[in-house]
Image (cartoon, rainbow, N blue to C red; front, top):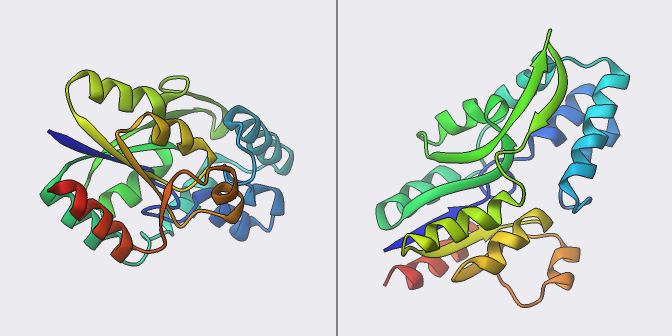
Amino acid sequence: MKIACLDFEGVLVPEIWVNLAKKTGIEELKLTTRDIPDYDELMGHRLNTLNKAGIEFKELEEAAKQLVPLEGALDFLTWLREHFQVAIVSDTFYELCKPLVKQLNQPMMLCHRLSIKDERLEGYNLRQENGKHFVVKGFQSMNFTVIATGDSYNDIGMLKQADKSILFNPPKKVIEDYPEFEIAKNYSELTSFFEKEAK
């Protein structure tokens, strides 16, 4: 039995926080796990930036609602679900990803929760520390062969643990730091990779 574990932002959909940065004009919110590998550091930076600017959760939610999946993402995911069990393993939040998940026909999402009080973002609750790595390990413990795809530093634990892995359109720095991984630059190349693994 084989299961595909995919990152969400950067692989199937645009970066939600980058869209918020564009919407608000706050450049600091453009930083992602491509820029800051430490997720706690990144989220601390985001929360501090939002609080200083007085931005409420509803503005973040609005930014997420305006997004659409990357061009070709739905077709790729539809094909993939015909050939593999599929789990989306992400460091996004259920409260933000709902509109995009709906547009992708409700794949299984494994991600985190935001802590919201009186419309203010107070913090976040990780589903599990180093969650992407342990998702793969968990599936492997159930005798699944795991094929993983991600694009950034926070995906490396998942990619290293998986039985077979590929980076999808990663930034140059990630390629330089992790030359051992195959690279797909588009959905056609990613589909070819999974076609080989489906046999």
